[in-house]
Image (cartoon, rainbow over all chains, first blue to last red; front, side, top):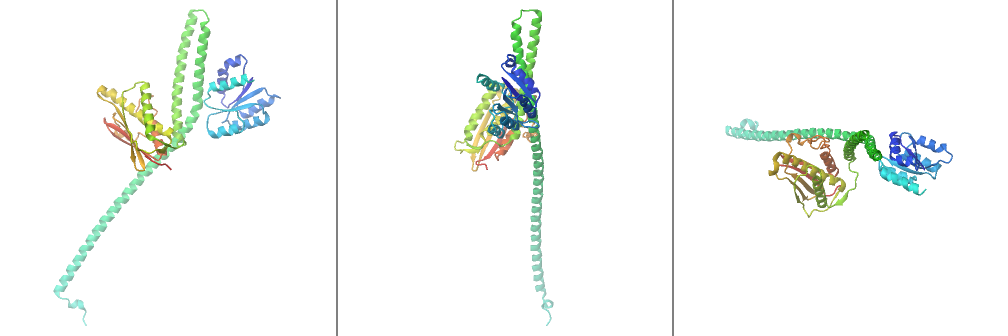
Length: 126
Length: 317
């Protein structure tokens, strides 16, 4: 199963790769990274039917925000799940995200246990 | 006919003079009283000007503090992200070392293996320190953000006495469970006829926690200086004051020297050594009381007591 993480902080990639080291090593999970909303859309568009089933995206990014990305993904690839990860656990962004079709809302610092659970659920429902 | 004036007799003249003298006397008295009134007014004007100057300075100070607040909130936000990386990566590395140790267990013993295990244990304890200090910094950042958040929480009708009982107790047990616990007698003198008042219970519980914690810390210092002959007491009192309620938190600790009393409420001012205090506790406390439209006064006598007096309006707008 392939997921895509979108965050403008480059070290997020290292962090995720290490946190999901076992799952990646055993090939249960494949993780891709994009450092902007634009890059994420390009990655998803490169494949005719993208294999990515789940996108986790930061909200606060230069250029396209996570919320804009969410709307674009939802309109173009309706079967991809999207969850937001944001430093601001505020109601405003939460409501906007859920209204635009986000599956979940994780606040920073990311609780990797709940993130792992979310992904594990995905793996069993596959 | 000749004018009357010229025909005045001597006696008439004398009486006229006395009359005039009396008049002058009255006018003089009048002038004197006018003058003293003027002086009074002048004094009042001077006082008003002085008051204005003081208020102006307070406003300036508040303005500075407000911009400092915004600055710290901005900095806190910016520091939060890198700090999360520090904490996450150190935690991850500790997990990895755990795994490495488990793998090494499967190898046969050798001096090299011994050396590796020793080094790994050092690295692990270093990571523990990084995580520990990272979490400490995270705590500071969180209280800085809390500080600048200001009055967004919900105001609800709250039983103040219940809140005080709960949080004085919580502060006490927190102190007992932490390092250097001390014996303290808690005296709660709560006015049970107090009506419920509108406040943000979450924020206001911090006021009670902070003041109690400060009292414990101060009394701990006095115990260290005086030994067992001194019995530490924390007294918390509530009283109904018509349209206001009064909350008094008093300890019989070392007291606050005059020269630092004014600084107590300033952000980042602390008398605690090294890493013990952030200097934000009392400043947050003051901030919360202000958002409740209340006042905070500090009274103290060296070596006798420190008394924090909070007044809160029964209904806030």
